[in-house]
Length: 391
View 1 (cartoon, rainbow, N blue to C red):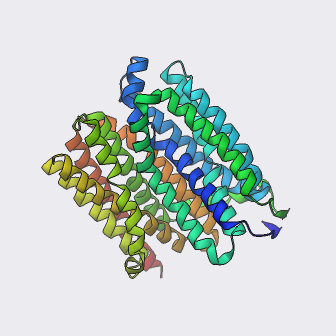
View 2 (view 1 turned 120 degrees about the horizontal axis):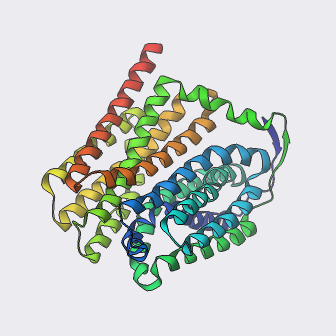
């Protein structure tokens, strides 16, 4: 454990602006590759399905980085970690842009994922410490919303600009963004608080195994895996399947999720009347129904866009419910339990593209993902039963 001496509050408006933009850039690196797969495959004379490893490798690095950098930011300071992480991310991203073949690009995407993973744990912890208490909920909600919005927004940006900049140009642009983020974070972040470390470096990792062997928590982590894994698989499957042939229609599919991401948080006062586990089950179930409906009906462009918007709404409402339901069971290790939550989100993201490439048809992918959502809902229900028996 460490004690700290509080510093002056951060300036709210510039801090929030820089952190939201950085969150979009950081989290969006997972998704921006999806609309680029076709162009990358043409450039390398490769198969689009094989290039889904570009998404998976990044997600693996991203997930491992969550577990590594959360405790490191406790030990060495949020600002210091970010001012190292963003330049490293810039270099790794620029190197992806000049990769001579898929194998090199996949390895560099793993490094890129690890580097950008400095931001979420250190950034969220910084806001909880350095923003005035009355504004912290707003700040953290805005960053969480930016992480979700990046999933749709960066796909849209990628599709709109790839014909102009090329996929390599987009990575160069992202690298420049990380350079800008480093300077902006340096400008708005107050100096790290002084910490007196009283525990060993490795002690902060000791809670991880004990949390993973708790049956109720482990079951809820299963639900986390399938929820975001399914989300990434759906949009990767759309890209690979070719069922949407018009670039305009594909743009509509991707952009159609943004209203859901923006509007669902407004329903929070009403949704909060249900307990977090119940909400998680409801929205996992809704996701399963929507995916099954897509598989059965194979709708046209308009119908598919509407169903995907409903699916994104289920994801947007389901993730905070799972976050809250995991925190409820964490007892004295809430920070580590939520770091594991982020880790399993990233693991799910890494599995999603592989699932999309494994299914021979988009309708079969929808059925498989609907089944996965049902498994996630059953896992949460089982976790409630385990908790009730222990009480």
